[in-house]
Image 1: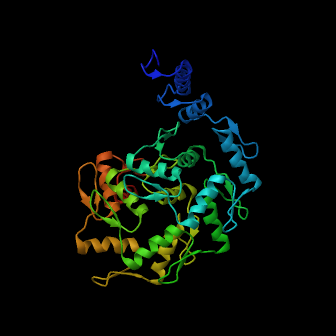
Image 2: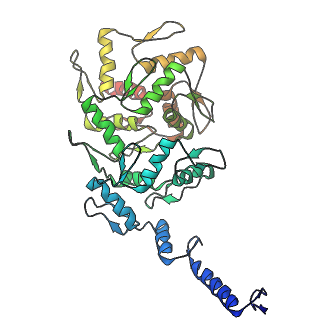
Length: 392
């Protein structure tokens, strides 16, 4: 019986000792590649090199067709299948084909209804391990993919790719009917339905159809009166997640949409679009009185002043209004609700316009300027009152 000097284990022959020593050295060698950024270990140097690109963001593999770059050669090969249309992996159950084997594997689970990957935190199940990995980040808050331009972080690399297009202005998906371009493929698909008239998402309650699944989901809440998205600050509830996100900006004061012409910021994308019309002039003309407007919806509302039509009625007192926004503000007079709160002093208001005017007390903003003397004012009514001085 012989003893190993390193671990004091006893063996029948020297050959056994040498083989144990050899495998021990081999194991050390297998884990000798360490990332000097995060400390993670790898068995092969090429695996370490591949991992390092997640920190550096380096994408050395370039597609010679569209110019898109990738961190791995395998990812580039898979990407090229988009251009060639090649789908070599075929499902033997339904015949559907896929460009990648992993896509086929995931698809097969839909036939078996099998979701073998389970989250040990909430119990939710997934078709693939990658889906589970991404899901777990919703619990941990991990966002490993950082934008090197603005520093914002994301839980998925694909979301980072889409985000970067905000900075670059890249819109690689083109409509072959009107030449309009989009940053995302799904946006192009939805846009094309405006040409074809296709509305593939029907409501099973009233038979109304929609361009997008999210629009159908929002519509269904009008039948159920369900408002599952609640504000954790004031408790107000909403029928869709997007409305809650917009609402929260009232509390935070966040205005992520900035005008590239004058620098003014807005809490909503549609408000920025409306504002930009000011710089472009007023292209929407009323065919009754000749008054012009910067937005088509403002023209539509104005035309109701000619028809005297007031389609929005209060179900409490029966009073009617020409605009839905006016009805919403009116309802607050019955409920006493003041949902719009100033983040600086805490004062609350029943209308967003009242909050906007109030905030100028804190900021000192005076956006209304007299074109005669140059004096500025926080409200339009103050400017009108001032203008009468010059008229006298």
